[in-house]
Length: 325
Image (cartoon, rainbow, N blue to C red; front, side, top):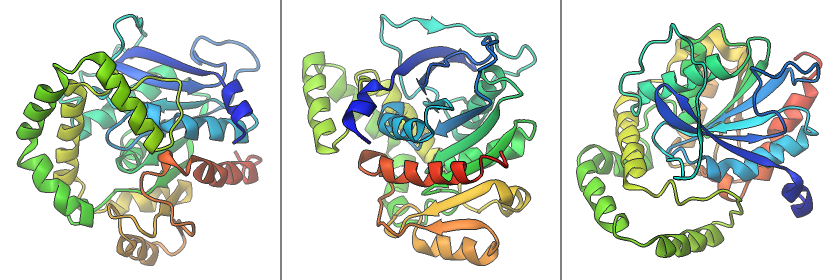
């Protein structure tokens, strides 16, 4: 995307209470409050991105901008952070919203099931029922999207894109074999290490390290990472990861079968979280599904260098199907 166009796109960062937890939402487009916006030009569709783990929305800003631009700025693109993965800066106002009074308390909100309920609570309270939804899930976000379809069938989801989907056999994958003992057995050692290293570290040093990392991964963003490299946030990411390894084992074919027409799967050719064997298996079981294998050797963490490529694919599908939508 042209750098001048990218700079012109305004990104709103908001923190609001969702499920009793402060939640970061990054929004591309002038529409920041769809519930109270009575304008006749209010968009009829929202593109909603659920991140992988860790759920740092800042990594997805270039992707959201590219997608918003490719859609000719007709539809808002929102990215939600996982509960507990991003803390609001001290000077940032946390918005209070009118959550569903009938909503039950989200138990274990930092765990896998709680994170799914957290996303459902947001969509139910922050998106009007007449606004259509395109859900995009990356990595474990794909698993969450499938669970949203299962547990919130009333949501007006017209299509979903599951990018590099970790929806089965996570602990058996090449990376999962390494991550599982670290996350499940040595998680508390990671907590202590994070706390001892990050707590005494001055902000100026953290800022310097963050800038180095951003340059290495070639990521430009107007949002700060200072409020995500906190022991609390990293501990929650590790906790979620441990639950992923233990819970995401068997592919839920019932959900896939029921919603197959709404699903686009996109697998990588060199993805150590979901190897091509997983692609071959699901392609064999659902030959009529829209199940694709990447031809560009894009890595699992596509947001660092390949946001434009993935945005192009999604925008092309939406444009081709806009009349149906």
